[in-house]
Amino acid sequence: MREVTTGETVRISLELNGKTVSGNATSRMLLTDFLRSELGQTGTHVGCEHGVCGCCTVRIDGVAARSCLMLAVQADGRRVDTVEGLAASKDALNALQRAFRKHHALQCGFCTAGILMSFSDFLSRNPNPDEDEVREVLGGHICRCTGYDGLMKAIMEAAADMRGKTPSHAGAT
Image (cartoon, rainbow, N blue to C red):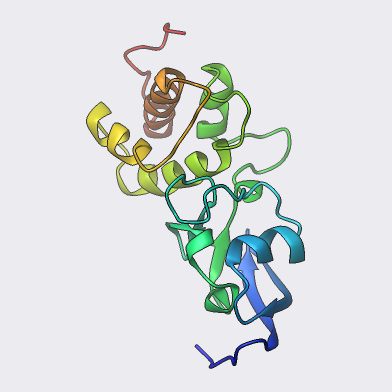
């Protein structure tokens, strides 16, 4: 990583959702702010700005990370995936997104992007989680609307769908 002095504006490039992009960032600009203001990726939300709420979660080189805890210059040359890159197209949602919609696992939507990004990473590493493992990952996110029941159902169903199996609670709503 190159050294950047305080107050300096630098041009950084990264792979965003599979495409190489670049933009200007000040030395202290957070990745969250860079994604939103410089690159127009407004699905990544700014909540607590302390890494607690999880709504700013993106994947950095395939691993879920809080973008409010990372400087934009630290993302230079790296792969960053945001919620905008999860679906193949507007008409082709991925398994997590379909399950979230089916189980009403979102209400206001503020936390949704971060939860989707955390679980897109988690399920790629653990395709057959039990409910306790899912709850542990959900513990890193704050949702004030859903009560988490719909989230649990959606995540368990998405995991089963990704494995090609029918979930045991398929009829539950």
